[in-house]
Image (cartoon, rainbow, N blue to C red; front, side, top):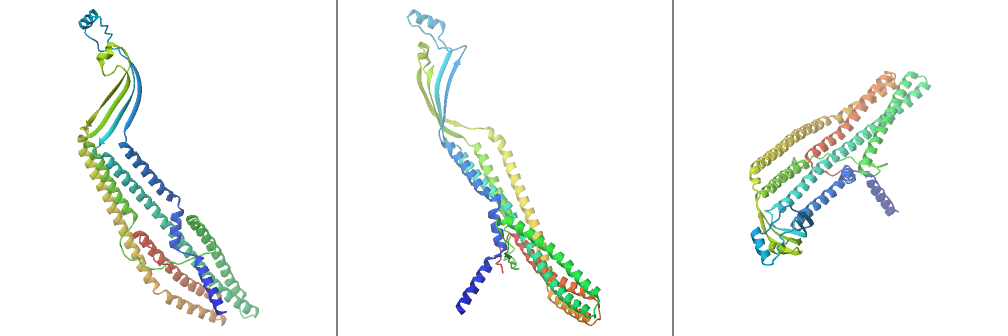
Length: 432
């Protein structure tokens, strides 16, 4: 029997754990569910397409063509030579003014001055920049989810404390109603306490509606229902270090790398290009013009060789390109320094807020104790007819505010700590 009880207790404990939702789970599920996540795969596909296109630049370039042309002047023998050949019985027609051919041109890069390699580097660094920019956008999801999560915790803490106060009011109302029936208390005192209880019920109903609204938003983020599940309050552990790990810093580094690779690609325009080429065609006239002057027969012709080219114009713009690259790098570094400066100010402000809340929380327990003593004394005084219900309600309200402030201070402290963790991109602490 004892073993069965232990098994059932273990099952209840496991089911209770499954029914709880942590802030870490919500952030992870929200990121996986966020529509922007699909862009990571699209960026990789785009990179693969770009790399494949660059690699294709080393494949032979083949062009097929057909043409027919007419000319008003064509190469011909001098008249005295053609007359002499006519006397010898040789009829030299000369080249025809209508010419036609079907051919193919082939070219093959041997050395492109490092252009293809630089283009591959540009494609990879650009993908890294785009991914880092996407990381920054996805990182913002964490803050939005955390804000909703803590809004739920704060609202539900307010509801819990209000329900405690409501029970206290109802207990005092029952006592007053009993005294009214016995003629030792006025009906107005009971009515006053009942009105306060009804007002508090309305506040609880509004808070419940707000909490459900926040839960609906959280469900949309994570893509699943959390109905009936309890949100686990995160721990109040400070970040393990003050090191800044924000994804924006990675984006700045990727932008600098992309700037450098773009300059290397520009530098390749200063280098000569070497390649093979070949031309083959079937038509008239052929490469043998003398033969083509004697007859109009079609012939097969081939031309092949090595070609070296060097675009000298690139030297004119290279200096400005380097100045542009240097200016862009300075701009990126300035953006990085500005981000770190603002981030440091924000983290310092958050640390001060955390320290301030810790100082405030030192007196919360004592304030609750004192407010409770005053309220119990007021209940005794009301029972003895020394004070009226108004004075008691004031004391109950003071105690409720003290207890609610203590609860809210705890959540606010955790929220400020998580804001600091977000500012530094610190890893999550374990939940309690």
